[in-house]
Image 1 (tube, rainbow, N blue to C red):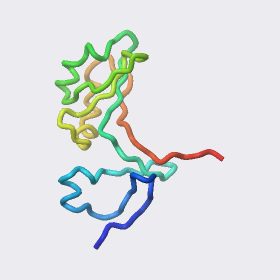
Image 2 (spheres, rainbow, N blue to C red):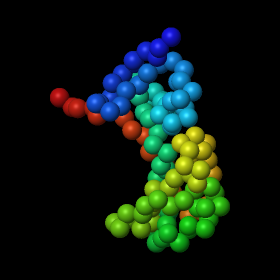
Image 3 (cartoon, rainbow, N blue to C red):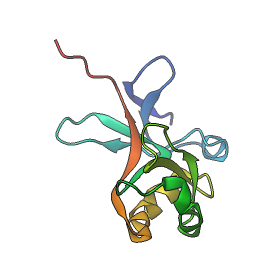
Length: 124
């Protein structure tokens, strides 16, 4: 039984319903997909987590605490040194999603949000 195409997001991404093949899982091709409410559109996690600390707290200075929480600092934008994109130390999307809530315990954290990709919605 082949997987059923549910939605094509663009030329490179599509959502299929059904169990992934073992080779898709082994190669990291199959990703979890969520349905965003109330729009009903699909959201695909990237494995990156956005964390914003209180103003004046440099995200790079929290690198040891971030590592203890199971993440590594991937990028901190020049325009927002108090914020950063993190990725789970394992590199696994599931680990980033399941441990994202633990980042609040780092202290001085104002916002934590997993990055999700969604199809572009054009306003008419």
